[in-house]
Amino acid sequence: MGAAEKTRQMLAQALKELMKTSPLEKISVGDITQQAGVGRNTFYYHFKDKYDLVNWIFETESAQLLDSSAPADNWGDFLGQLDSYIRQNFSFYKNALDYSGQNSLQDYIFDVLEKRLTQRIGQMNEEMNLRMRPDEIAFTAGFFASALQGLLVRSIRQGLEPESSRYLECVRRICSGHMIENYLRMPPRGKQSGNT
Image 1: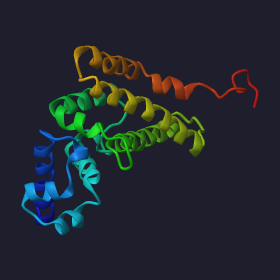
Image 2 (image 1 turned 90 degrees about the horizontal axis):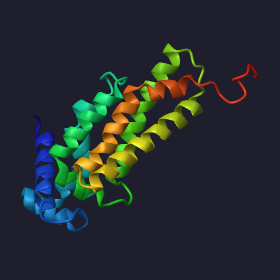
Image 3 (image 1 turned 135 degrees about the horizontal axis):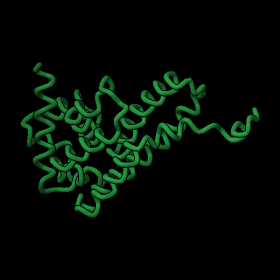
């Protein structure tokens, strides 16, 4: 691990420690740098703001789950792994998701899911010869990313109690039942009866 990576890890650990006792919105960059024992310039060399650091933590720690080179066709397993990861780091993510402004973790999670879905739907478009236009792929990816992100955020905000995790189980079943594949196979309106 290089020096830059070590510094980012120190800042991440400092923020996590602070978030155990304070809401993210009340933590300043000065608090983080003091906790980490580095100067403010060091922080800004690596991150735009504290929300950028939160997103980096999510990206780094969930990299194995969200690696775009990993198979993207089994969404049931992917969501199960993501759920497990969030549960292991629950207090950090619940606190991070309380902020919903610019550069928020909610938006970042959506972006990650949308990117992964765009790749998978693009693959399926080619494999199944669906002839989807780029705007149709983008819309479909955004639709499913929005649903999955909303469900995940709702589950975390409800505390990941057994009742709230029931929603994730439903999504796992839907995805395992090839909902996305079935959606993509549906002909557009007007083409169902042979119309073009």
